[in-house]
Length: 267
Image (cartoon, rainbow, N blue to C red; front, top):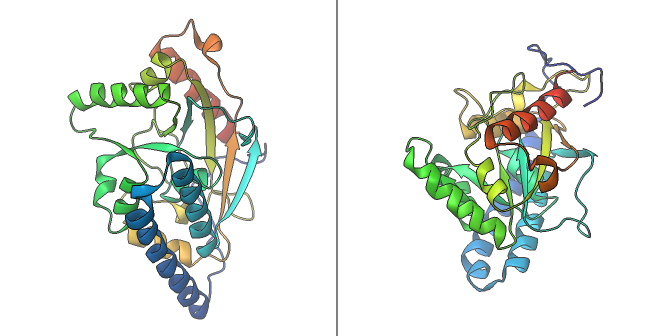
């Protein structure tokens, strides 16, 4: 985000799409969702990890295109040639589209709350995409998830974690929870902070894009369809290597990551 961007609670409503445009987009989304279901149920059981990652990356990219969501990448984005395994991306969380935008750029395994499994259709697709689910209502589930995440990283996976534990409307950043950062520490992973931002054309926060608070998934998608060309900015900050956080405990490292993302967004 540029220096002129600040967290604002007011945002103008973008010019809405026409009814014909919305019907066309819904048709594209519906067809693409059917393609995703076919891929997940028919191809995934026989596909290797690399092929599966490429299919997920392609599907997420085309879904964003169907919604006409523009992804703007700034900062230090990972390159396919240099993006090593055993990396944990850590980001603030605003909408369901965060996951698809990140997955359209790099192959990732997401750590998500268990409620996502209950999403209609998309919950099934997320489950088939090898998502690691955590039940935040069960304290004992944190230890299990840390162990699984640690093993996944050591096996060469790249994970993505939203440490706020919930979504916001983009006008705030909630305190980061530190438990799953322990998995990255145990696995000696590179940690890559990502600041996510949805701007309006005038630089204010596009709160209409959020899947937060009382907004349902269907309402969030409907709000997305009303916008001409919503934009998501993915600002990849400088990766943090194991030697750089060697003297930090889990809590200190989490606060450091949070401060980096907060500093990028609140200017």
